Amino acid sequence: MASVRGDVRIGISGWRYEPWRGVFYPPGLAQHRELAFASRMLPTIEINGSFYSLQRPESYLAWHDDTPEDFVFAVKGPRYITHMLRLKGFEQALANFFASGPFALGAKLGPILWQFPPQLPYRPDRFAAFFAALPQDTEAGIALAKRRDRRLEGRSWLRVERHHALRHAVEIRHPTFIDAEFIELLREHGIALVVADTAGRWPLMEDLTAEFVYVRLHGDEELYASGYGDAALDRWAQRIDVWSRGAQVHDAQLVATHDAPRRRRDVYCYFDNDVKVHAPYDAARLAARLGVPTGLQADGRFTPPPGLPAARARAPAGRERGS
Image 1 (cartoon, rainbow, N blue to C red):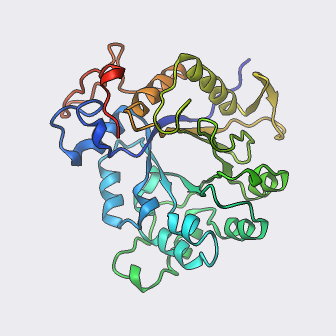
Image 2 (cartoon, rainbow, N blue to C red):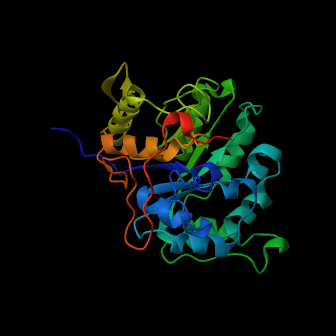
């Protein structure tokens, strides 16, 4: 008898892309309604703006209010911590991030993604200190947020309606992370190692290190630009199905994980091949293989709920707009 799957959510990395307008988004759709449209077509989206700068509580509140009740956001941690500080003296910046408003998402707050640059190698002491500082639940997150500096006074969000666990995921891009010690450190702290498909540019690791799995698909053959064909989507669907049932992939076979007994896992998967408008369509096609509902219809159109204009069918590949 097949084991029960965890919650599987397939979505996109970000939603505000000019080339998507008139292709994924209906012609004439106001920019401020794009999240409302996208969140009704797919069940989860990564917030990218938080990577580039601290957002404000009112932005998180607006994103919460623009999306359906059962929607989930992943939030990308600040590059100031991961790329600029490179985990040196990060404590104040970490407090400021958690004070800036992610808890205003309420129950829609999903995993927090920490992406590290290709130039940053694995430094055991530095990563151990960072992982130990990450709050494991909202209670610890609020306590950390209260240590914000003066810049966040008057623009902080320091409350939650109901305390719950927090999930963290780490995306690495340097070969020194292919290290058993690093994997054990992730497992010790219950942090997911992102399964990142980067068209072969950076390491693709599939170690299961947390109670959930986080997947980022940046492009099958060309980073950020190429789409995923049927064979590739079938392959990723198989993996996600296996992971969600608490197993891992080995030579295309189901095998037991290090867990005993087997535990089902929630899976979050985000397409980041946004340049040629592949991401939402690839996400919906992968979701269909896993029985995850989306707004993509058999005729290639995304059909919105009442009150939002319908999107036209996707443009032929040769006419897609890129950047």
